[in-house]
Amino acid sequence: MTVSATAGRIDRSTFERILAAPTPADLWDLQKTLVVMGGAAAARARAVAREFHGCVRAIESKSSSRRASRLGAALGSAAVGSVSLPDLLRRQDIALEELFVSALPAVLEIGSAISSARAWEVEAQLIYDDFAWFLYQELWDVSTGAMPELTTDDRCARIDQVLDPLLDPAVPDGDRAALVIEVFRSVLAARMLPLLD
Image (cartoon, rainbow, N blue to C red):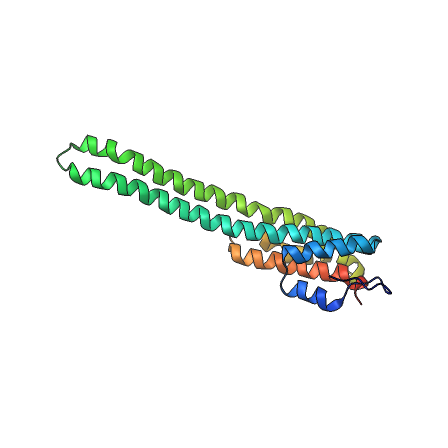
């Protein structure tokens, strides 16, 4: 990221690269440039870049954590099953009551693994609530400047139309992740326009 010494503005090609493929490292560099620039417009852009940085990191972390959680649940269930099943097969002559007692730990472990994976899914969905909260205010502010003629109800309806899918657990996670990144791109672009060469 570079700042023009004469104009005190951010290079447009560098910023376009950030919008095309945002990474935590590029957003970190952007915020450093915005600090150097100073001023109200840079401060607003920096606030968006900070949240966008957190969003990209959270989505990357969530994706890795989800894979690990699902794999851990599958491996844990398989491990318990592999220990219990051979024991049960060797002891075919045991009573039905003993069979249930022997199988109970395996069933409980599988249930525990499934519950842990579900709990992780619920927790992971909550990050969209936090980002929607931030983006609502940003979309309100940006739209007030860009479309001052909108009524309050129209402005609310348009923002809700954009952000409601982020809050809907029925929307697939991949779609919500793509949407939150797209909304952040748009808000960051709007905040950065006054600062670009």
